[in-house]
Image (tube, rainbow, N blue to C red):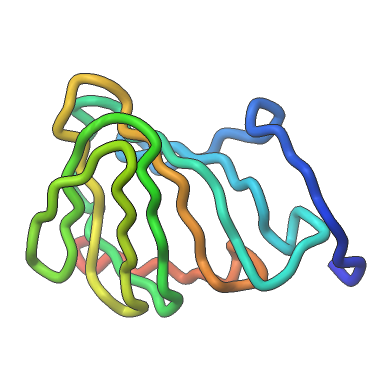
Length: 128
């Protein structure tokens, strides 16, 4: 979008997207959908027991996760790290990673990329 300006969105009004039984998300800010630039962000939900088969991926941009609810593990470059509400994770660009829900409630997180649009994030799934 050429008209960059302040923007307010309500998560409840946004389309739910996702990858089957792995994760669902709502894109809050993305230059291809909102009058914003320089940042793409949204919320994601991972249900208890959701599969992680094929979830390992990487992409060129860095990514930030801030966990809002639940408990889980973040797999980063071959290592597992516990996370819970209040945890923040920085994933360097190009680093293989995925998130697993290890609790009995939804694992909810805010994600952010330092790019204008979600369309600039090319996901690579080496196990698929």
